[in-house]
Each structure stands twice: as C-alpha cells, then as structure tokens.
Image 1 (cartoon, rainbow, N blue to C red):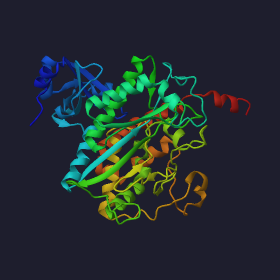
Image 2 (image 1 turned 135 degrees about the vertical axis):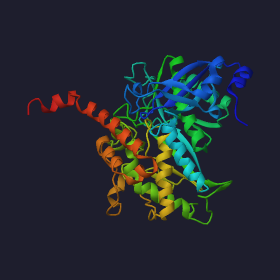
Image 3 (image 1 turned 120 degrees about the vertical axis):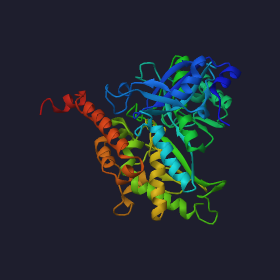
Length: 434
C-alpha cells in the first residue's frame, strides 16, 4: 500500500517536508514544502531550475520537477516537525536521464528483470574539524596511530552518540562507531539493505552528520583528503547479489566463501575499475587519497592498483567473509546513487560474460606491490585521466546512458579546468627562479 504523505504528516506531527534530489556533484538540493501542500507536491513535484544546480542544463530549459518517493520518508530525529524525502527529477514529463537517483533505479530495474537484487552497506568516513576547516576539532587527538583510540572517541561522545541515537530512532540498525585511522576521523556502521534504500540513507547520513556537528559548534567533512599527512576519507561499499532470499554470492565450499557468480561479478568490476574511477573518486582531491605517500599512521588504507584478495585491506577489493566483498576504491565525495549504479553495471557485465578475475593476490600491496603480476592495472593518477576513460567507456554509455556520461564528463571537466587555472604557493616556491 502506497504511503500517503498527508496522512503521515498528520499522524507524525510533521509540519514541513524537505523534497530533495542529489545532483551530479553529489550535492543535496531541496525545497521546504508545508505539509498542507504535500498532496499536490507528491503528484506534481517541487519545481527547480536545473541549471542552478550541477545538472547539465541551461537557463532556457523548463523546470525540473522533483517527484518525492513516499517510501523514502525520514522524519528528522533532531527536528521531528520536518520530514525528508528523496525525489526523482522529471522534465517535460520524462525522467531526467542524467539525474543520479534515476540512473540507479534504471540499473536496478535491469537487474530486477534478470532476477537479481543488489544489497549494499556503506562505511562513510568523515572528519570533525574546526568551523573554518583548517584543522581537526580536537587538539588533543595527536597519536601517530589513533585508530580505535577510546579516549579521543569519547571526547567526541556528544556528537557521535547523537548521530547514532538518530540512526537507532530511524531503525537503520547501527551497530558500531569508532575513531578511524586519522586524527579527528570517525566512522559509523549500520545494517546493509537493498541498494536504493542504502543510497537514500547515505545521502541523508551525510546531511545528518554535518547538521549535528554544526549543532555542537563543529564541522564535519567527507572530503577525500582534507589533510596531506593523514589518512583520507574512504567510502567502502560491501556488495552482495540476491535472488529472492538466496545470497547468490555465498558458497561455503569455496576457500573464500564466494560463488562463481561472485567471482564473475568481481571480474567485471575489476575490468571496469578505471572506467568508473571518475565516479567512485569524483574530485581533484580524490587522487591525493588514492595516490598518497605513506601517512602519519604508516598506511594510506586506499588502493592505487586493480587487485583483489581475501581479508587483506591493501587491495582494491577485499573479501572479509563469505557471501560478500568490500570495494575499497570509493571515497567520501562519491555520489550516493552513482556509486552503486556503477558497481552494479560493471558487475552485471562481468556476470553476463563469465569474467574471470584471476587468482586472489595475497600480498601486502603497500610493501610488495612490485610483486604483482605483469600487466596488473594501475588506477588513474588524476581526475582528468579518469574522466577521459569514463568518456570512452562503452559499458557506461550502454548501461548508464550517453546523456549521463556526456553531462557528467562535461561538468567534471569544467571542474578540472577551474582547478588547473589556480596558481599555487608550491609552484611559486619551486618555479620562480627557473
């Protein structure tokens, strides 16, 4: 039975609804609609000028109408008179082909037609920093190896517990919170679910963390590499494919607990890793995490090579246990909807072709990367290289659409061009006397 938002508003005491969509750069865009207007909004959508956000449109284009998905409703725990809704953008009566949530739903529908359901869980790392973002918020958090530091974790108890309490109230099934590998860095884990639900929750989670941090006079950032000497923010995604109630990736007879389907899916993802890198790692700053030198803690915890292994965190893909794998490439800037869409498109391609990922490479890639077999792929070194690979990817054009690929590459290349126009202090210091 469809959710009636007007009834939900009356029964839950919701006075306003945030009708939101995520643009190509992963930014949440929203309008605040009074509950009295939600029936009309649910049918007609909230109107936006697409050009005013990061969508590839012009001021001459008609309104983008964001139709809210009633099943995505989240009553904001710290502001319960407001309900948040994920929306699907339309223009001219048709779904906007470049809109990230629409893209994910399209790829999920193809999987569904083949009898598959993608389930994902995400690990979104973030820093708590000063309001101007120049330093971590806790001056006492100075250990060289601060990961799991109980004292530093508990100094931020008020923020962490409020975020976790909110997830508990929302029924997300949070099960652990920890101080991560960088000073000032944290991670919170909640239960995996169908990919669309996880993507909606990830979009809201990033907003929630930032909003609660602001309540406490701090700032939260998911920036991939906010501090050069510290580990960056990853967004690891755990992936499994289901048919009804059966996990197709699970095979107790395999040494790593994975089925042939899982290995084929991994093979497809490895084949497409460079093509999707501009999606999983979408900013100039992303490549300062992937290709970083050793950090203060002694490891970057991010891959730069296309490899997989068992329970070994130095590889792009880790198999921590039976029935799932962890894709460790994506970072905190990745789009909540484009990440699972790209992973699924690549994995299904591998599944349909029976792609063999080869044998797992159980070495320490940070210390022994030179021992990788000849021809082992390296990931792109910068955003421009990654965008060029995305632009010519037949897989992404076929599965995600030409409209998306062309628009994404166009806008992200403008981002690169803007970065390239900057003159840095390093350039002056090293080149002034050339």
